[in-house]
Image 1 (cartoon, rainbow, N blue to C red):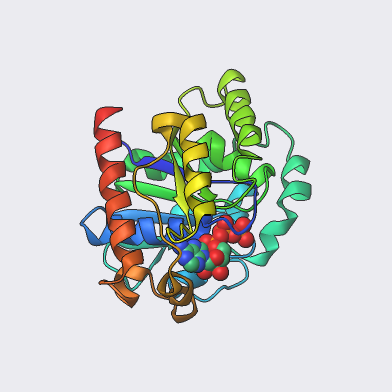
Image 2: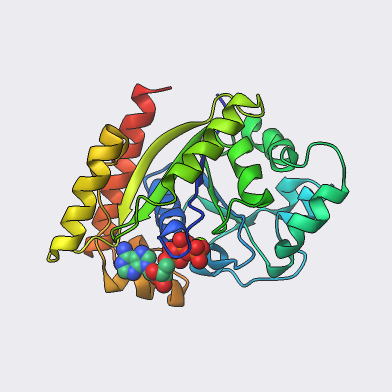
Length: 261
Ligand SMILES: Nc1ncnc2c1ncn2[C@@H]1O[C@H](COP(=O)(O)OP(=O)(O)OP(=O)(O)O)[C@@H](O)[C@H]1O
Ligand SMILES: [Mg+2]
């Protein structure tokens, strides 16, 4: 059995990709699943979110450019069962540098991840994507078995999802990754007190049906604070609403995975 690889993606910025990647990873890890979080975003927010300092040359990027083995870039975090491949600013050169390598420039991350995934040292590999459909994100789409798409509960939430779905279909049809499936769409920053949030959720559910996770992530100040302490929510405030929401999400994901292997 190889590792289960999940890409957390949405080309829209600020919708909760990193918050979800960090907290889903840490929650699965704390529950006993060995997890590797891959920070594929030059902003490197997932890296600082788990308490690791950004350092030049210490990211997946050199490996994407054909230098070294990915496993040499893995860092153990201080959180149980959670390892990280950090991100760093240099990765913003990916769209220019990777095509220069020639060959198929969407396959580099997959080639780098495969030896690690096949060793199955990790139960889960979770990839935090940048807010674009750039070469980095497409590399994640080619590497992953599953996609998780966070959608912020606001107007226009659905706008843009058709773009991801189209790219998803192209990646499948091109033969680059015929196995890629949408694991689920996650409603984030839900504020049940507003009619708007409820309207958005029903609209999204109407459009996407059971693709939408039952678990919704509430808008919660503790979730927004935790990254500045470099702590996943399960360690920053394990009894908060945000921590319970990410626990429920992890459970829901485990159930979905066991029924759709
Ligand atoms: N459920 C939540 N409740 C409150 N604040 C949240 C929640 N989820 C995310 N945030 C905050 O919203 C901002 C954007 O979240 P996050 O960084 O996870 O989004 P992103 O999609 O990764 O952004 P980017 O596209 O820039 O990578 C951050 O400041 C984060 O702390
Ligand atoms: Mg992010």
